[in-house]
Amino acid sequence: MPAGAKGQLRKHHRPRFYRTNGGRRRRYRCSTCGKTFCSNTGTPYHRLQHRRATFDEVAALSVEGLNKSAIARVKRISWNTVQRWLQRAAGSCRRFNDRKTTGYAITELQADEIRTIIRRKEQPIWIFAAIEVWSRLWPATIVGRRSYRNTLTLFRDISSRMNLERVPLITTDGFTFYAKVIRRVFGPACLYGQVIKTRRNDRIVKVERRAVIGADWRLEKILADSEDSSKLNTSFIERLNLTIRQGSAYLLRRTICHPRWKPYLEDHLELLRCHYNFVRPHRALKFGRELRTPAIQAGLVTRRLTFREIFSSTMLLLALRNVTFAFFDSPVSVSVDDSRLSVAA
Image (cartoon, rainbow, N blue to C red):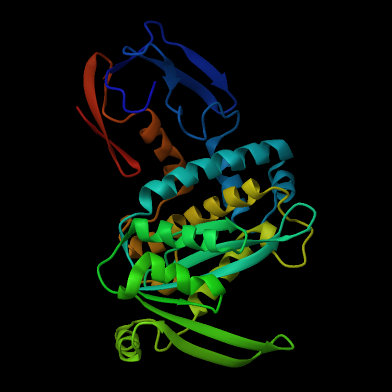
């Protein structure tokens, strides 16, 4: 059934089931378009021949630094099955990220790049990442060449989703295109500073901080009001880079595991970003005994989510929006609210 169709869904006149290893699944028919579907249609769990818990465990292991071969050995399933499941999970997380990572406020933003390799290690590829310092939110990421176009794509994506409540402070390293892109996307209203580190024999011997956009007194004032930074720094984005490297088998140092194709790396980063923002609690955001995720701190959700809720929410977008059901001869109206299904008789 097409997304957003209005009609009535009813059970088959005769109860029809199909069997999977995880149990039986009842099918339903739409009286508007005549197509049949089950409760898992539109989710990664559709036609899954294993338990949903196994699927969730595979996704969780992949964001904890295990490669596909290791996951296949641990769970005793085929490598091809792991590959197919992770592609499904990544597609679901990409749609969830696009829908939920919007309307956040930015007070302090830091950006950086991670260098890695693909295919036959012939040429490097770069991962552009950014972090909103106050909420620790990872709003966007881009994979590609270290070019002006990719830098512009990253900041345009961030600016199109953010809620500009105050003048943001943006901090990066001395990469050439950052100043041009930030001036083009945010204009003279923002404050932009660079932290340039000089290394000698793999040691930092000099750190230079300078304001590129905005007066020095404005920069000092916003740093004085900041809860996280007392001076220009890139510490938070560098810590996020470490989290990304630890959570991805592709990016671990001194390893034989590397992505052979760019889409594989992009899929894994979307899965990792969804886990970081919505599932994994951040230790720096702990409030009393309450464990918070960056999405909670940014006001995107009200509680920690699980992979089961994230993967199941795709079904609501594809099949169940503004639809009336007819179950057991009593109509039930169904509405979509975040990742939960609210039912009113």
